[in-house]
Image (cartoon, rainbow, N blue to C red; front, side, top):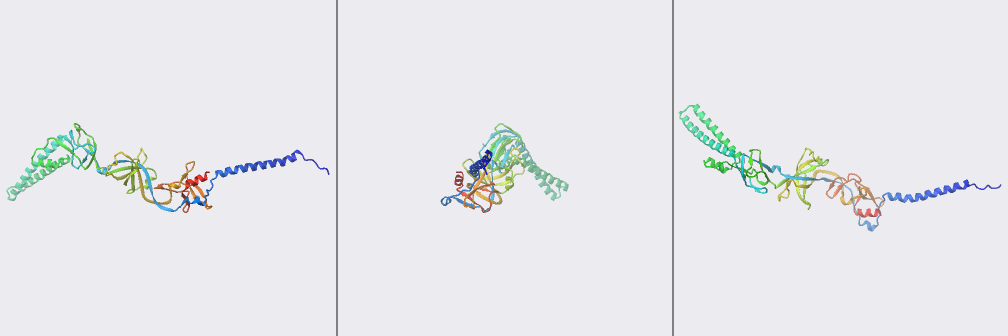
Length: 384
């Protein structure tokens, strides 16, 4: 039987199929390295290189959250007061300047005050009236004992004396309200003359004159014109701002640290009050931190950094800051010892910072061995 020659279609089909298979194999061999390059692989080291890698076995531990925020310095309002004019009249002399240390009762200014003159005159009259009424009452008591006057006359004399004594005491209180010193009051009782119309504004507490609002010649209105502010600056308030979840972590009595200036100097303090009203401008709630200020470093309206250590203990995984790296998208990751002896890259979630560590709420588990020293070297090896 005579053999039939092959047609073009009969030999082209197997050849074409062979070419397609070869092409696909070539494409597959080129795509495989690219896919492997995009997939993170474990880093393997020699025994000598492993000597420079330090691991930390993760364990759940108890810690206290630390809140970092800003604050503004203010006076301790329990040790500061604004001095209002106790009487009306023009200022004749200002005796202190801002920054001066004053004692309680020390003169701050002199005022030519008709209120002062009227109070002195009223006290003199009340003294004289009380003295006369007391003498009449004493005489009537003796007369009544000898039945020389009636009981009604005796009772009236005693009532007049009691009323006069009450008027005298009220006039004395009016002088004390005007900050009249004991020496002037003693002189009035002895009938001696006093400076006519010269009222004295005195410091109600000991401290530092931090503000002066009056000048000689200025007319004061009793009870309304602010004259001075005196504050004890040996302790100050720092009003720290709390936002969001930080509010739930702060309690009265929590320890705090105030950072002053850029040199890292710190001052210890304590939270004494947590506010309940949201500031409409900053959307924050204020926490008052009491700070001892013996050297006067803190000044009113100064901006400071505040770190508050929450008194509420929490439990979680803590990882040193040195163990955390960032990828090209700024996402945090660490290296964990893998079962094959290498080191695997693992993405983590960072929680609150606690001193030199981060809380890790997600990405790690108790028992994981994390590279805390040498992570940068591992990253370099992985990216080569």
